[in-house]
Image (cartoon, rainbow, N blue to C red):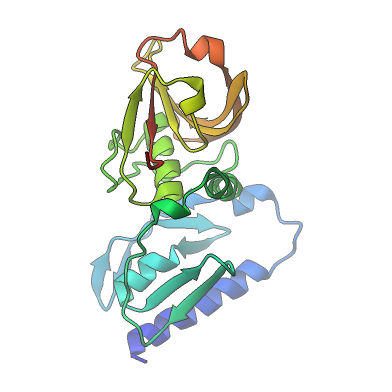
Length: 231
């Protein structure tokens, strides 16, 4: 194993230890995820990594480290296990359309709710590479795209103008005009009467638990949805 990989694995062990140590009574605010302002270097070269500061420690996605340092990271959905292979080169995970279900999307959104509870600031600007409709990465569209990318990976986007209620599914983005420049929300769950959503305002903070009634949405101008479920 190279020295670079040894250092990374040692760092992962330290982060795991920090995450498991300390009194459980420390306040939730101390564990709130915030974008890290620190700069990262690998072998002296500045490296762009999306990092979050939680409890005075930096947390970076394992896949991002694997890509930067070149070691294998694989996920086994059948056993819900992550495998790190120090002798294997990194390969991007390809999201299978067949593997995406409303249940899998809801599970991802539930994980995001733990990381970004209501009032938590999400990393903005969020720069998406999935080719979606919103790329400025701030406010409601930045949060909506972050949620969508987390749930659907690189699956293609599809726009539906004035969708029927039956077409709306968990993870879809719903957009409508308002007194500003429009608003977009993420569907968490749908009933016959309303959708429960997660959304963000102008302050780049996540909000959960909002409800939008079917009759109200269907009356709004420029009412559209963006979905990434296969046809």
